[in-house]
Image (cartoon, rainbow, N blue to C red; front, side, top):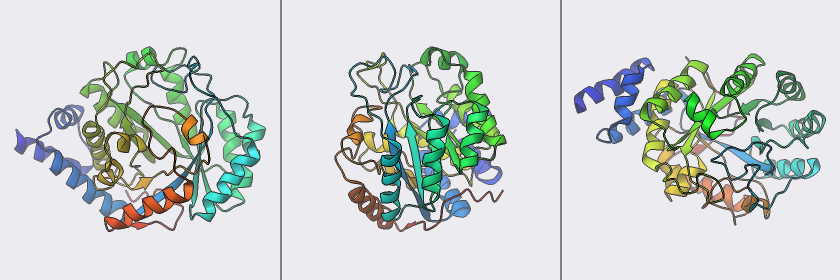
Length: 346
């Protein structure tokens, strides 16, 4: 069996393509994990090199109109202290991020309708004037809104599919439509964004088959960025008593994704390090090439409470920058000095 699994890894390494059943086979056993991670790391080095792209994360609002069962920011969570940053504060945080050496900022929030198209265009234009790349992660919008953000200078957009299992998607995201989620991603592609997506690992009733479908969805979309991480139950949500995902399974999904999308940008996610104190470094040695340190300042780091145990909530942005730089250089990698766009060598 192990020889067959090694052959599947070899096929993925050479062709960057696998059938669903082959992905399921890799996900169903841990006997070949070391080989899988090693090969993903080689594919990463060959296609995106040894530089690690840092993206400065600004969490500018934890107010959300959606009610996703797994998310601490969900509308019905009354135990969270809500906040939103004013546009000038967001711009100021971006300016500080640049002073720390970041080339990209990621503007992330719940789906907060306070931030109109005009407000977001103002924010994007002023951050672009700092000579920074701008990634948005602000949820589902109309094509016209996405076009307006692009016209203002937005470069990338991150919208995780979370799961491609339609039945599971409907159960976990009340009032939302899987079809609309896909529409958003296709509109973003059409409009010329670098498009990011991803999934949660370890959702209740999630199967290896559905995870395989997730990976194939990333491949079919030809996603430019893919963020995968473990589902970490939040006690203030309906899924608070679930078991959650594991670090190892998340790492496997990430590694297989690297084999199939060799030149995509794949972050070592914060949630991985919440489950394993060396999680981001292990991920960087298993196919990842991006890290997204938090550059939000003050109490807001604590209040953006997606899940419990989130790392670095008491650190300053300067400390985070120095910490991650030390970790990256400690494994023989370098910090990228570019904007980190996907090379698209294929």
